[in-house]
Image 1 (cartoon, rainbow, N blue to C red):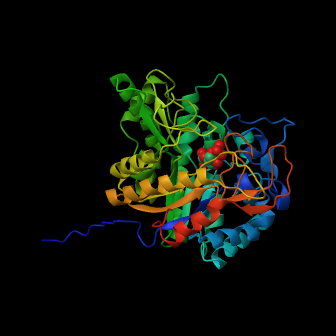
Image 2 (cartoon, rainbow, N blue to C red):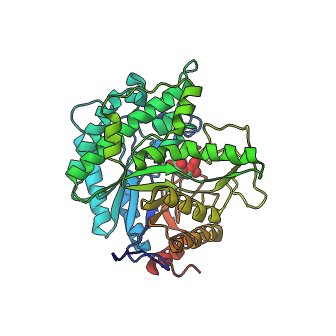
Image 3 (cartoon, rainbow, N blue to C red):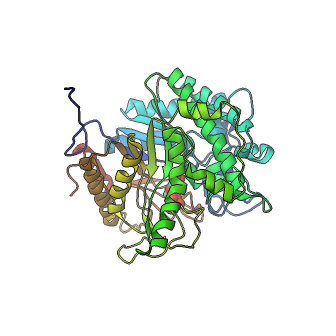
Length: 471
Ligand code: BG6
């Protein structure tokens, strides 16, 4: 009889990828330096939930971010001090192709990431790179309609080919589109499209998504060809959604809400459109244009792993907004959970639930690439005693460990915002996630000075002990 090899863990595997995660647009600043062009968030002064404000004179904190473009050496040294094994960031597409449709890349932009990745590698930290994290070049959205237009596939693939070739000796872990399932709530940020008032919104969303699926398949193919042994991941926002009550209507509606998000995983990881999507398309007059070879490409080149973000859980009541809800803004309060000042309900058990849900569904390695607590921090006598952040991370790591023991294949954990960054949702700096404080404020004041919070040493110890010492 053939012996079956089972991966049974009682704790985190020894090669578990501990680290932190950020995005270029929320940190780098230098938004027009060294040939960088405008990306969509450069026109979103109030964050992605408020959308594009082309002529706004409001302060846009993304423009300077936390100055990582100039401070990266200092920052990487601090990440190394915490013992990071990996560091997730994105490449700002508009640094490499300022408008997005040029034939040749911007050498200065390429050099920046060469230096940044070298700095990480010098400290023994492996880069994990997102190719598109709410950063579509603005020109592509304005001139071509963004991902609604099939031409985007060519622009994206030219960009991918450029960076795969350039960083092939440096980067092994990649992700295509950050939280592509947030296209329902944030079509411009997550899907790189503008939806006109008189347009069938779902038609736009599903056409753009299809174009992204084809692009993802082609990028996966290229990535494997150019960088042998590389891994291309899908990346989805998958905070938990629970039914508001045990009423069967709430339960089924919640199932449907969840499925709208999992749809993206179904296509990207299983390599096929699920049957349930046809009813949704029929009932909403959606007609997705596809070319003959598209479905074959999607089937042949699925993503290697599923990266996802998990911050909280929400509850869903039948009859409230279905499309657009990915565990995000809407929802009814859960009386069993505390919430942050931003109303995000803290639910560590939900992380174990989601890990199991996703592994049961896909049987592909999972990578928690975002999880963290964004809240106010108070500087007292030159210190920040963020015990609340330690509590949040501790409880989530405890549940993550349970998930590993449950049999979930978990590759790693990158804490979101190990250094304070500009919020994606609201474009502010007051919502701080970091183990490292950055002196920059909502009104744009501040010295950009970095400082350790209490959680810094705590997370260091967690990594040192491979998640065993959580005290
Ligand atoms: C995720 C995004 O949706 O949530 C990040 O991938 C973002 O870019 C994170 O920063 C937290 O959201 P916020 O609004 O608190 O920055």
